[in-house]
Length: 164
Image 1 (cartoon, rainbow, N blue to C red):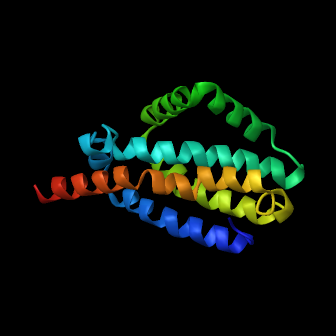
Image 2: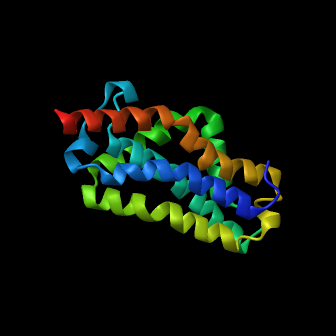
Image 3: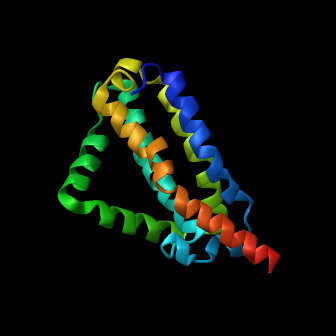
């Protein structure tokens, strides 16, 4: 549990930093499925991370001007009803259909935009609100930790592809 926004945002930034290595890969490396990453490609991982950052961004925008977040409530309800796999599948399909430069651009900017919005959300609405803090932690820092294995596998596969 965090007691101040700065600590949360510093930890989030540190957690996301490892993912920025994906931006150094070629388009070919990003599009290559990796068995050790559950069949995901770097593009898939980038899209998946951004999908949930976008969900958190929508909530942050709402909490910047309101006490609650209808989008957070909707997403949490859909997830609780077993809709997580469908939400993830739709997100993967969306990012697989985008041109790679758009995937890269969205990946490059979404996390920073989210951090920026969180700095203007009153702390009472997110960092000092246990449920909201848990939501943001889950969509950001914890989510990065959850997919560290896939990230490592994709980067290792890309290094092997470069060496080969």
